[in-house]
Image (cartoon, rainbow, N blue to C red; front, side, top):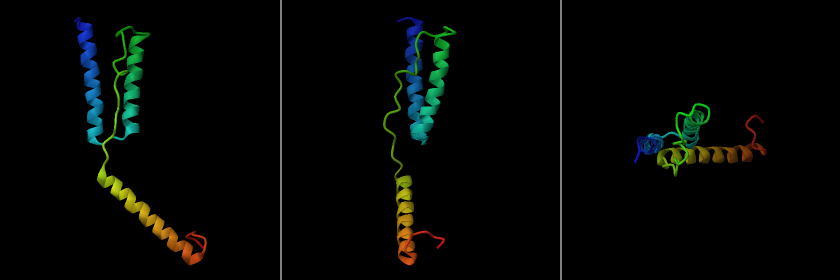
Length: 101
């Protein structure tokens, strides 16, 4: 195994671990996708015009399934339920559901 192969292997695993850590911390899928896209673009630039590296170590990295935050999901359901109930009340009170009439 050459030094370049070892560094490629190490870099791929470090990037995957970094993405996994971002998921555990609680970053959204869109944020992680943005960070990974920025890093991937920088690595692509290092490949073609600069010729510092041979391949993009971000290519095999996958975001995978995101952990579900149970408390955030419950809060969203509470908010939606409150909105739905209050909208039903307004509709029954003034006939059209708008709060200003």
